[in-house]
Length: 210
Image 1 (cartoon, rainbow, N blue to C red):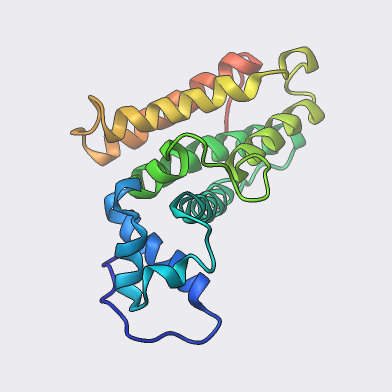
Image 2 (cartoon, rainbow, N blue to C red):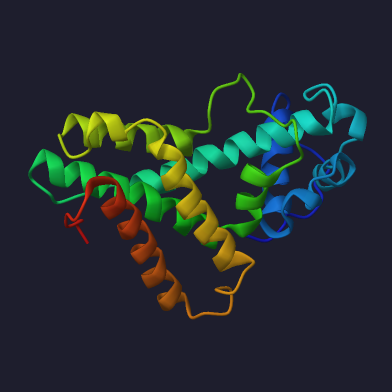
């Protein structure tokens, strides 16, 4: 998405939304380093002081934009969670697989946003507290495995960290590491392998819906 040209006006009352939208434009290509209050306000056509009526400081704007990206990521993950499985076990396994592949897909499609959402400056917390929506989906998918009788309850505790580190690490390898020059179809295939391997490791040798 191209960065919008500086604007000289905006609808009254919409400045907060305009600040977030412009920040999204800038960070989509440039990641966290591209988010500077002065640059954001220049694109909108207002003074930096105007931004501080809505955000206490740069860190507050960064946190709001990161939260918006996390929400978008969760929606992308939900789109990968659809399943044709008829039984509860199949739906549960497919749901977890969709969470993992949706996470990787978003990271690869939007590397700038991915960097901001999870690699922003230390101390930037989601406004209002709470855990990021992508992690909420992972928790729900793992709980669904237990409810479906696929995952033993004693193996549920802490399983989110094994799963998250797998997809998060894979995304990093694909964006910045040795997989970055691989063909997209090969990266997708390897992502599926990584997700399937962690599922098998959790629940044993069971088939996951493809």
